[in-house]
Length: 451
Image (cartoon, rainbow, N blue to C red; front, top):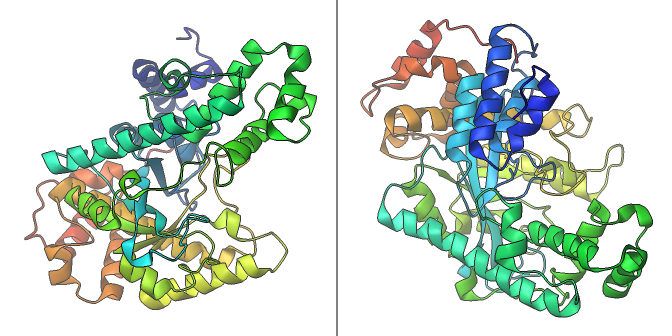
């Protein structure tokens, strides 16, 4: 750990693979804030609710703690992380949010089998019946044996797929052979590897075992296209090309989905609800057969929230079919009274830290994204404080009309923040919505203004 007071030195440790280093680094910034050493804008900007952390590959290496600090500095009103197959960042992110007075949301993403769409491609290109699916608003790790076993199974299935990918690609990339435990897992903070970690491991092994003079030719021979000198030994261009040519459909490392490869969408939703989270539909672009029938897909998904990655669904200054589809799904969501959350993934090099919400194409949707973020944050708050939220008996009793439910949760999310959550201590399912709002409105705890 650095011993000086230079913030840039400390910031590098916010994404250390060692949790104690991350804790010491955030402690430093909290002290700096208390001494008014770092200014921060008010928390009024639309946030990123779909940021992957280093628990499932972040292209900048951000830990949950590091992303939380950067989100607070950026003035995000709500920030959210989502990782594949794990909830390893859950407690860390919420804790960092509490200390920074940052509204936080935690989601989980995986791939699922959708039997009712057996012949239809949904949002996993070229793979009928397979869907990327999410749950948003986790506040705790599973506390029952069934849910714990389900989460463990997600991790085990991912590891098995990774090993199979490596075995297949090893045959193609000889002599740059890698081993899962020795070469891939050390790149992760808690052994949750992804294809992108595998690509890093292959690039590093090639740089180690191939003479530098012949490294470019090695990759040309293996990937079938020219590799510029500046892309060696592991540039984003090389890693993306390696993944596309060897691990995606048509590549030698592609593992076709099997029924036992992924959980059913119903089992995943049951797990999410048991953990107090909200099943969330992950929208790709609207061009597939499955996404062309959003009513049927919503019914099959069991979702009550819609997640969108805006950045990949429009070209600035160019009205095109992508933007047309984005407008269509946003209009559909409004008609369905379906809250929408948005964000950039940051699990591929070049993706933004936060969407360009000032772009003319996105401006009309900003209030919708902001409302959705507030709704899921309010659900998170009530789950933490009282064990109830957007779904369930309490919400059904007080808000049988979806529009009224959305309006209440958006209002609660707008007025609450971590420093005010103490005002909700002791609430139960007998507490009325009016009482909840009165408690929050009556609390005049100032927002922390420096970080």
